[in-house]
Length: 256
Ligand code: HEC
Image (cartoon, rainbow, N blue to C red):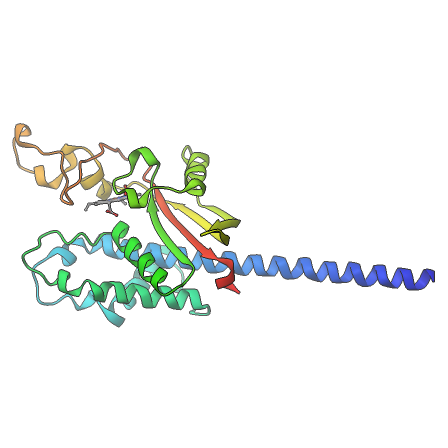
């Protein structure tokens, strides 16, 4: 009797041990996937920022922005940015992201080749928004969002949700990546990661003060405008301000 009781206990303990092991392995895998997704997106963001001249230029040759060429460019940017190989496409989420990025660029083809429009508005914030919208119509539980504390928001569609607001409050003094494996997205269990955006001089062209605005270059101060090239009022941020961040969420059911 006693022996069988001990056996049962033993089986329970061993099962528990394997269950924990399994949960930990799943959590590690989830974290890996969201990390890769974040870095792939950040690389596309850097590519889009660096290539604003090409995006807005009048030229007949913008093929670097489309299809396989675009992906190759994002991959190269990744390798330079993180000094490591581009992640393996070993998860559906990564494949979907890469596919959707290309589709979004393709959807914008007419705009990108429209010589009448000087500033095309294809910047990381709008790119993230368009990727998310497309993923949503495909019914994929993967979301990208550029956000900032509510009082500094430009586009109210980027308004932070409760999770994002509370994360930003936590990290605003010393910005760092925040990972949460027990969050919710659309009311469903999700993993979420917030990656703060470092403020670099490039940001100031739009979010800085009129002195940083390229539209004011070589103009009398009395002629300066505080409206940036994208048509928004400049916020007077400096390099010491908090630049907001990229919020990425993946529904857990989608990770299984
Ligand atoms: C060419 C102008 C331009 C540059 C350069 C630029 N932004 Fe923006 N930013 C915008 C516009 C326009 C929006 C609103 C986009 C939209 O409508 O979704 C925006 C939105 C954002 C948002 C989302 C929240 C909101 O206000 O709607 C964040 C965060 C942000 N920018 C941070 C940055 C950071 C950090 C940099 C530099 C790394 C940067 N931006 C560079 C124009 C710019």
